[in-house]
Image (cartoon, rainbow, N blue to C red; front, side, top):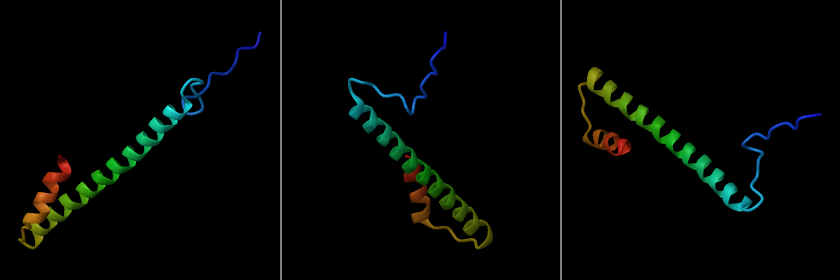
Length: 72
């Protein structure tokens, strides 16, 4: 007796609501990309704040505020 191969979650579809699952997968992918870019932007802002403060003795209020709001 041959056992069928299990379907991976990306290829499995729900016969009752395939459009809704496709919508959730697209929304999840888009949200993941957005949050990944926001995290990268947060690292760049923090790095520039440390660099400006340590090397050039310069503080920027708008950079500190952007770091605050990127964390929210």
